[in-house]
Length: 506
Image 1 (cartoon, rainbow, N blue to C red):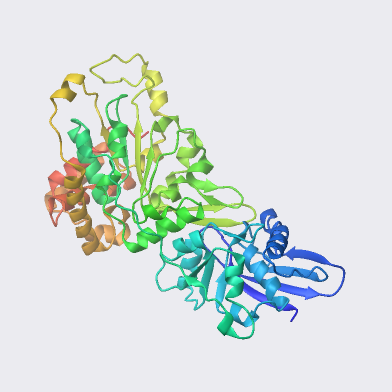
Image 2: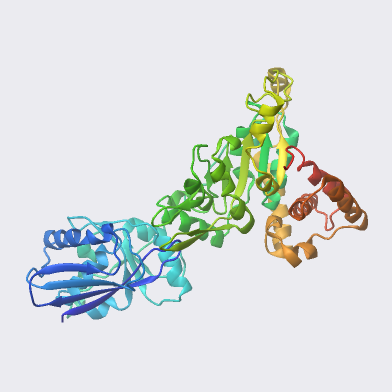
């Protein structure tokens, strides 16, 4: 036999299209040619595969003209994930393993020069693609990658630590001498992380209430206050108020993290929390590069993205958040290719009210000029502020007030109310209030007659855009859910309006 076909998968954004690794052996001048729009990392597989076969005691066809084609040819391929299928294709074409046994399996894995299998990025994405396409094949991966992919139910995932482990399962002839591959087990789930508790924050009742409303409805939040008032402490405790992820959310979040090589089995089912430095570029936040990689907003999928010192971020980076905040996805378009990543995150941001940070503080006088304050706050554009649901002031607290303040509610007590409010939303509409739009918004945010008149009057006086009107309506619906009310009342709308007046949209 001089031809062999091995199934594998590439990475194209969060998609994982099927790749056919075709290996052909022919007479002629000895050579090893790899074609099919392969990146440099893939082309280097020739040397890794050659050394891995030889050090493993397997025959490499030195006297043959070897041609490896990665089809389809118009899809870019990158990383070392094709080392294992290329090696198996050569072995099958040279009749060292049974090519028929390759038909029911897909392979991915990077080879060391000694033949050991190293983990690859995107194992979960490949497993999810196989399940969505209803492929009846098994998936063979390195041990660490197989433990990731095993979280996908209904799919046979096999693990192997060395090239010889795979070869021994595919020996030709009498299968009684073959050693079957080991079915992978999902990596053990870590214990629930005990993060900082909300009761550690003294005072700041209004800010704590805003966090509760934001957590209940999946809303974005901006906290404005002087240095040391507790903005970062509040943000660090926000994720402890959110309900645990369901299986679909956990898989979607883990698939993005796996794609970037950040997946940790011990953190399975825990909402991601990302907090990039304010020097992060637009590409770091929303994704990009060649090939396109997910950014912080995608790594925070179904979790929290905390941006501290919000006005200090580059203007281009902040403006790049506009569309993802609305659509919950990001499409990265380049001349050669396009990639789409999910980005359903909750934005929690914090900022000082002025350059010195003490505007409105009773503890220290502000030394900024009105023009300086306007320029500082003007770093946040009106369209971006319009997309942030809640804006809450976090005032300065004196040391005497901190010492005299009693302990507040624990995160567990607040999280219980948040979970009850989320349950009401799921039973009523199947999504969080922040995701409501169109007819669903009209159907599930029903206002009483007094509330409708109050809402219309407030919108006219405050000059709201249609977006602001709908965001206040969604917030009022979340406040009503926290109260257990089936109808949005005037007091719910009045509270929601208070969360839109800290910074004026310009």
